Amino acid sequence: MDHKEFRVKAKELVDYIADYLENVRDHRVYPGVQPGYLHARLPTEAPQAPESWDDIFRDVEDHIMPGIVHWQSPHMHAYFPALTSYPSIMGEMLSSALNVLCFTWASSPAGTELETIAMNWLGKLLGLPDCFLNEKNDSPGGGVIQTTASEATLVSLLAARTRALMELSSLNPEVQSSELLGHLICYCSDQAHSSVEKAGLIGLVRMRYIESDEHQCMRGAKLEEAILNDKDKGLVPFWVCATLGTTGSVAFDNLREIGEVCEKHSAWLHVDAAYAGSAFICPEYRHWLNGVDMADSFAFNPSKWLMVNFDCTAMWVKDSTALHRTFNVNPIYLRHENSGKAIDYMHWQIPLSRRFRALKLWFVLRNYGVVGLQKHIRESVRLAQKFEALVLADQRFDIPQPRNLGMVAFRLKGDNTLTERLLKRLNARGYIHAVPACFKGVYVIRFTVTSQRTTNQDILNDWSEIKTVASEILMDTFGSENGNIVMPKKPRISLKETRELNATFGTSLLLANSPMSPKIVNGTHVAICDYEQVLSSCAQTFAQLKMEPKDSPEMRRRIRGIRMCGKKFSLDSYMDMVQGLMVEQSLPQCSEEEREEASNGAKSEPIGAKH
Ligand code: PLP
Image 1 (cartoon, protein in one colour):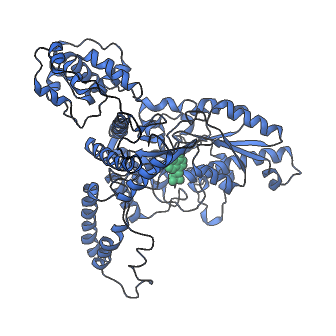
Image 2 (cartoon, rainbow, N blue to C red):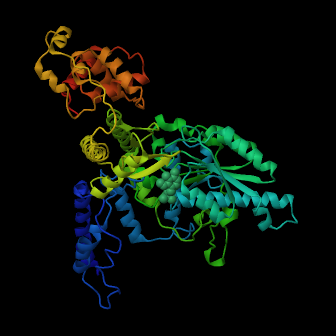
Image 3 (tube, rainbow, N blue to C red):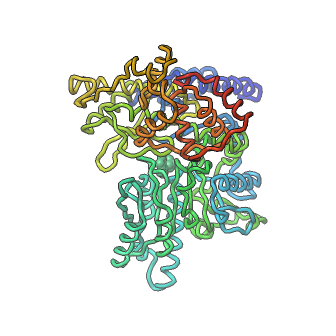
């Protein structure tokens, strides 16, 4: 392919990509192929003669696309998000074209310096303490982009292992390192990701799993008890991994308690926030970071939720010395005259070569801005909350662990096999895709809001699919689509009662009882009662629902509007109002203009408009 052909074909490819992403919702999210499908279609050897681009690309459409899982689809709910975005794709395109290897400053100064700058921006955005930043050349801390969260965990464990072995060697100069290694032990919760176990296996150290509490959270007291026991046996605790946002249920270990135990026993504390880390760009979620000042390393994946395409794991360390001691090999061909004046990232990671990943991170941070990224995170949480409300309103389902952020873990009430069958059938139909988790013997389906393009309607469609399949399974098993659950009779509000409550009540208001809305509050009730009554109804049902407070000037204006104009609103509006009131119990009085503005804004939103 020459320059001329590249100009034409690459532009066509850009159109293909834009068409794909624009219409990704229309694909069946999970492919219907069987193992070996591609082997049967492609030749067993590479072609001897060059092939035309058109022939090659035709095979993409004919053979590759049928075997793709559409991770960017709004109907993809498996795992955690792995989002891409246009600025990120463009960063990847440019980085591929430049193809610089940023292992030392000299190997590509812009590559190294942009990484340091972007990681400082991102660290500040998350509210990490200054000790994790690298704003001066001689600062011991700083950020680095690793390939995956698994690799960041391993890097952290190996650095901590070096530090511990050096300390032990100085106390026991006559003992071999290999023997000292046998005394080391590290810790994580029984909910930690499997990559933590893998890091222990590669690092040849023992790993102790701390039993999490009823909220799947590792607590300081249990950790301390285990450490004291191990010390009594002559073992040396050297590394603890805390998880913020576990894979199974997005649970959060208690960082402050764990940090205090680590400080007391001089253990390195690593924080794995692979998915949840992105949420810390929103101040309302930073309470989970309480205690991060006691961590030695912290990692999360912008390649999950922050729309920087894979690979991109942001890792910060308080003191890079331990990394240097672990990974520093300094052959003559890698030395340069500015060594020591800037970071040489090859000393912060396992491989030598590294891609220019800072470019896509920098593009995304600039093109969305903090406000755009925060909006994206909050919208995912809002949609997960909506899904949670739908599940809670159906008596056949259960949410055994409270939802955190953008993931809801739900199940059919009753035996685990019902939920297993539900998931299997959902995945086989391919319209939505999800994976299971199991906490303490309870099997659940994880429903993660993944795409930045997910709409209210997508959530409603997915819920409808889940309900349909659940009804089929319950019908097959129990001969009733309600299974063996006795449905309580819903109290009916008669028209007479309704008229007594509101003389001007018209039958059109019955539309408020929209069939699409989750029946958290009886729609008729919403339509005829004033907001204080509705609020108390909401509060009763919302007692089960995990609501995050919402606070922003726009939200306050909206809530004032809802309260003051006396009109009837959709369920979503009432949910907003409850969330707003959680932030500010007594809302300030509006000025005349604000009153005007609020009621104008409110006019454009009819009852049930969002459903
Ligand atoms: N840690 C946690 C908590 C995770 O949820 C995951 C993956 O979802 C990982 C680590 C592994 O991430 P990676 O694929 O980047 O290694």
